[in-house]
Image (cartoon, rainbow, N blue to C red; front, side, top):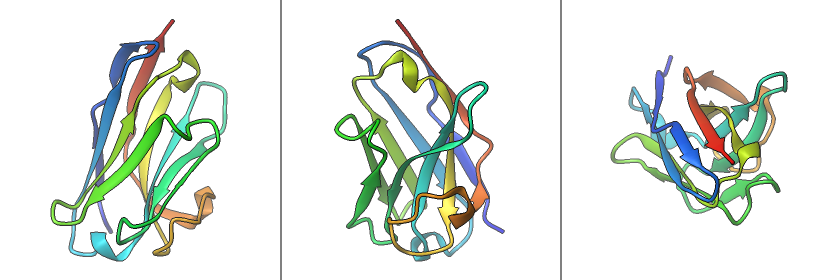
Length: 125
């Protein structure tokens, strides 16, 4: 079972930036797509972004398109989420997850079978 550890969350003012990292254990990191999800208080966990196993293709939720960028470094077993132009509505716990498949097309929670513990992102207005 892969272990995923997120880092990089924190408190930032609206319009600011944060970069989240997710380090994965094991030797199979480059065999699967990876994704980021978020969960705000009282809301369901929602898809944010995904990246294919090679890193060549990405997929974003409409709410973050043009502001967030997902990337990965397979040599370092790490996936990143660069978040720019942050808004108060981006406040949530952010989770990285390993997809069951290699494509970035999958956006459902059931398409992912390993999850990190989450990192809090708070955007003040």
